[in-house]
Image 1 (cartoon, one colour):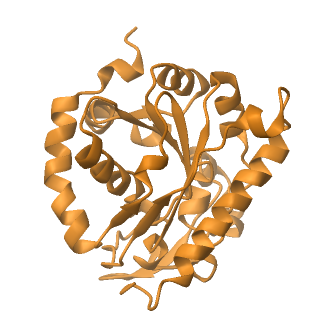
Image 2 (cartoon, one colour; image 1 turned 90 degrees about the horizontal axis):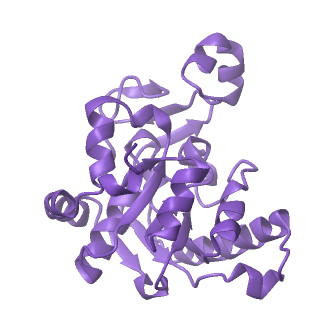
Length: 264
């Protein structure tokens, strides 16, 4: 069986980046700062996730990374199984998306690749706009274990603006509980309610609204050497709390510089 990371196609990735980079720069006026904080060798980039179904965190980071450093070192993104099926899944694998599981993460990190993970997943991506600048992974800490076992640093990354691409009203955890079997069928613990253009209210992803052209700013923070800071037997919860604390400080700094919603 072919290793997932071997499916990455640098030629296709370069073509895709060349197509989407102008769109990201013009529509979202995207900025990425701190790329030099990504160290050589395997690195686990841990980020907040924003924008709901239309999240553009990875394309924004990847477009700037590849433009600066070329295509010798791939970016792998740990992704939900639901988007990794059929022709779409095959295409995503060729540009660096891999199913989120322990073996894939370990393999990508051992290859000295950059692995991007969003611990909060859809829970984070659909956080209410009123709490858009709060780091909340929903209690998920598996990323810490992955970094420790691979012996790689955690590189925190934060962004602002993604939760302004539409109005995120509620994650809808209560609604997901009410729907019971339907929620379990799509493996979702949330049923978010959003408001956007052109359809107004949207439940989960239907009808699919277009993202507003909010300015999105991303910053890569300094890497965290887990064993150097926490010793040979680091406590998972303690590391997770520290990572979230560092990220909260980083996102607070970015948010403080933002003058207006959407406009940035």
